[in-house]
Amino acid sequence: MMDPQNWPDLVYTYGPYALLPLLLLWVAPRQTKQFLACKKEDRVKQALCAGVAIACWAAGFVAAGYVILRWPPKEVYAGSLGIHKDPAKFIAVDPGFFVQRTALPDGAERSTWDYTVVTNNPAEDREFRFTLQWDEDLEHYIDCIMPLSLLKQRKVNLRASVEAPGVLLYDHDANSDTPPEPFDCDPATPVHADAGGAIFGIGIAHAQAPMPVQNQADDDRLVRWLNSSDPYWRAQGRGLLRNYSTQDLRRLLQRTDLIDAARRQIERELARRA
Image (cartoon, rainbow, N blue to C red; front, side):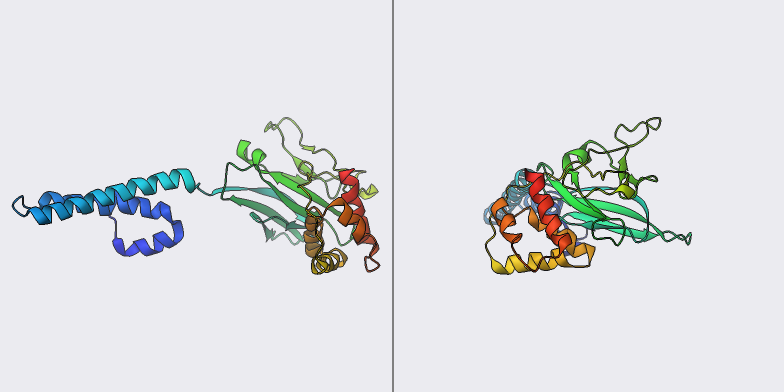
């Protein structure tokens, strides 16, 4: 049974999606019922009830058209990033990509990492960036992307490689008889012998159209993040590098307050664009 007292909460939560059934399933039928109950002798009341009923039905259909054309529904995709031994951590870089860590009760200092992607525009071809930092070394990270186009095709679950720390494996064909494979190596990602000679990510973190950034405060913030000892801020800084033009990246390299690890991250971004 529809209770009108609950509608304020529903409207706050679902917006036009709650207004649509409110108009079409409760308000408009109720006004139509009142119109049919009007006595024919009372012409004024009958006309008023008819006008209200017609307006309610019209508003309902207008709301339906708005919802269909202008209010695309949210889509949510979820999957696993695998089980990783501490201090490995995943860091979300782009809005709409969320990670959750759940410690395993086996005493082995391992955690299960899951991700959730929420998009308001399913038709948009988006990519969600995230970072895996598998230990405390500043160079032991991979920047990855999760393409929305891939999530639309199938559920994407990743897992860590036993042989090579920092390598993410993906069951690309949904065949249990086929071993999972790493994705192609991103040439801009640091390579270490203890990671099997190559670091792999989810696809290649393609460059967005670089935008010139001339604000000194933006430069200072970026340098602070790249210089940070916290992998979260370093990951956010690498995300900002993609918004800088090639000329601005070269200008940043002239700064004397960059630590060596930060300088290498800028150089890798330049190498990726070459």
